[in-house]
Each structure stands twice: as C-alpha cells, then as structure tokens.
View (spheres, rainbow, N blue to C red):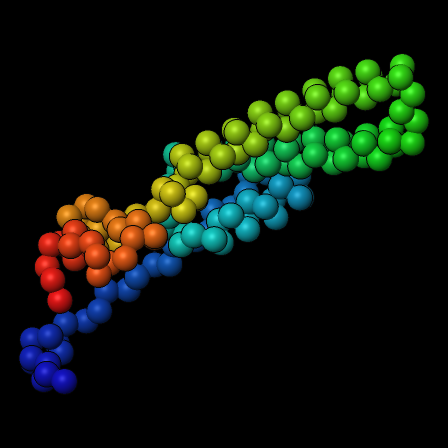
Length: 159
C-alpha cells in the first residue's frame, strides 16, 4: 500500500449528510404507503428526485387499482362459476371482459411508469456491460452460436 502524503493527512474529511428516504404523501392509504416504502427502499436514496416523486405516487396508486381489479375479477369468477346458465353466461363473459380490459389498461400504465422511473431492468445502465458490448464491436453472439466457429465473437481474433 502506498504511503500517504503529509498534505493528504492534514485534510479534514467533509461531513456528508445522509440523503433521507422520501416520505409517502399523506393522502395515501396504508397499503399504498407500504408499497411506496418498498419501492423507495429498492433504490438508493439519491435515486429519487422531486420530479420523480409525483410519478412514484401515480405508480403506487395505479398498482393499487390494478390489484383491486384483479381481486374483483377473481372474486366474480368464483361466485359466478357455480351458476353458468346460458343467460348468465353472456353476463359473465361481458363482466370478465370489462374487468380484464381494465386490468390490462392499469398494467400497461404501471409498466410505463416503472420504465419512466427507471425501475425496470431494461432501463438500467450497467457501465461494465456497456463496455463489454463495445469491446465486442457492438455485437453479442447468439446463444446457439459456437464462439469457436464465429470469428466475430472475439472481434475477429483467433485463439
């Protein structure tokens, strides 16, 4: 280990204030508050900026709506499954279709908000992976290709 210089030993470290975890808005119900905290704790505290907190509140609200619609759909399926006469079958199909469309719409909004907040794996940036891809000429070998048969898998270099 290299020796430290006298100048570096005379410099006092700056006190670093910890970044607090964003508190949930007061208008969120308790299940949504716990979801807010779960999402906030999944990322470092400095990840969250004030502009993203409104999107996070929307995300938590849409996740709650999506879960409620899924519960309603499941409950309706169980209660209606016992009596599926031809008259009730049409009503059953209409109601489950409406609930399915609502669930799909909420799921799309949740996925979009997660991407906008950069919470999904597709939107995360890994510098080491980006460097590795750049070193390979921007081309990743296909899983079924044998790297020994493919000269481009090693940037044209043979072993």
